[in-house]
Image (cartoon, rainbow, N blue to C red; front, side, top):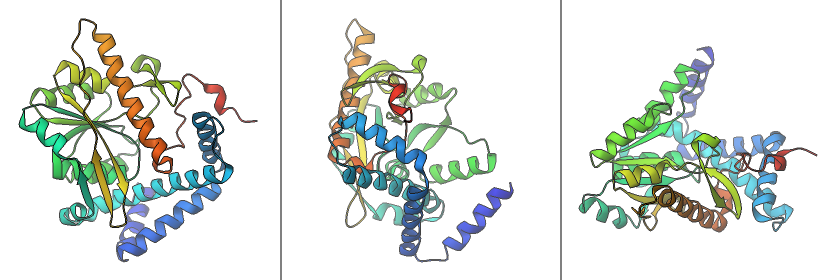
Length: 295
């Protein structure tokens, strides 16, 4: 409790500052954590060397690692901003690209499974999609500290997102799709063997959640990938070509193929701008734990 109230006091002081000052302060914080956090700098380097097969220079690796910490700092700030900002402020900072892909699905009565990743300012992405596009149901992992947990839920739900704790979430997501509503799922985290299926990501085997494909197939929903990117004026959220899940006699093969398509889409986008992805996560630890051993 003491830690939470200290956090709230600091937050109150931060919001006495102009928004540009807050942003500059958090960028400086990200740079400081980058300099001090040798453990996760090492994980980032291990991931990059494995994914790109030693093709990146040390200078490029450092730039990508700094981008990772920059995004983490801005996402922390965004959680605070989402708790304080007016809807108009949030909406004005983001441009939607290819939203017609979603509109067409909605017009034809299709429920939609949005798939996305820890990429760019994902906290802003969730707020904007839930407010400007469609109210979405999603999954979150609860904090052990109930005060921080309530704070995070408030920040994310202010703009219409419905969040359900991981255990038992499938029931709520299924209900939303049955009602023709949208859900949103992150697909870039390592999962346990019992919860994932093996797909190829950067040419390597990884465990990925089949939930988007499973739910889309069961409820005849359309999978629409999306990501958020920074621009000179703010941000843009891009909607990518939808993924249809087949309905053959082999449900397992249908789900695997759609899950593989999601992995290939995300890999393609990360290759275009790797500095925006969450490289400090041990993405390949289930199948290649040895790459994370220290020398």
